[in-house]
Image (tube, rainbow, N blue to C red; front, side, top):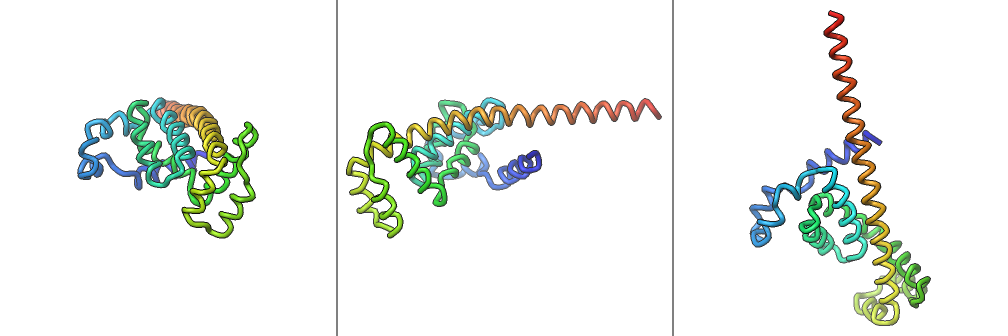
Length: 194
């Protein structure tokens, strides 16, 4: 698990957008004063779990690619969450997971008393229906079921992600601290034996 965490952190450091790159972007200039604050780009014990929770919430609830990242970045500002982590967490909902998330949200909505026909959802998905057919399906009584289900699933995922990342951060820093102590202990015993 530690090796995976190291690989992920190296990948993020290599591929995440840098503050300097965004500062030079002409589209970011109106927001640069707020979005490019250094505290929103630091990896701290408080900003990372906030970012994981916010990124999962926005990524699952707002199922529109592109808007997810912008939404996660903008909502990170008032919550003082890490923007790169929040943006990365929105990728949980991707073309491979979106159908499952939508079906689960319809199921959750249906158990709460709303009604959405999953058979119609399957047939639209199977035949590659156009956007007009999807909108007409959503205009039926399916929309409340799916929206309520998405809200519940995204809220639960955000809370779980927050606490798992908080625990993971604690575990990772504790591991680094123990290694540092062992290194100091062994280096001091080596110098005493000489």
